[in-house]
Length: 252
Image 1 (cartoon, rainbow, N blue to C red):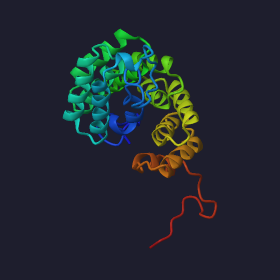
Image 2 (image 1 turned 180 degrees about the horizontal axis):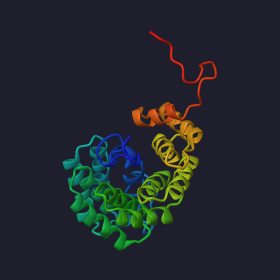
Image 3 (image 1 turned 45 degrees about the vertical axis):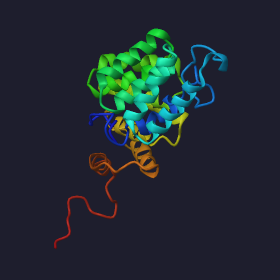
């Protein structure tokens, strides 16, 4: 798990953009209807009269390539969509996601900024920009981008989760907890948000141990990997065993 406050990085590992955002970002709903549904607001209603069949085919090829992490093929397909429909908003967003997933953050940022210039309400672009900025420790920019993502898509648990982590890294633990609680309310099976919420509950003074324990073990049930540091903190906070006299140890 890589979103805990004590750990860095968000694009390499269990929380990769491909694994977590693929269902969100892979539609070309605004210009290629029927491929996949994207939660971002569509800039316009598209009609088959204005969308070449070849664009739909290219979008489907891009989706399939991205799903199998064949980024060169996905890049080529999404670029083909944009060549055919230059201001295709979600085609631009998807190409930005491909560039980010392939490790070209500069190109991804350029494309995603273009998307929000076309339509400010493009929550998927703001979310991806926020993840890029967080991964680069550009926390002020991450906070701004993720705040926009939540503003335009308030029921997206991923946006709430990332926003909570960035808020917490900026030192506002109560704010982090609020966003992470909202994330698990929106998606009770979201292991990453449970894990991060547990980590931030342990930053309370004094630590909110029982709340941390509840969310940490729920995260494990949902597939998160155990964290020795969190488990150490939870053990240290356990009440003493009433059957063991204080200050006495059994001799070996």
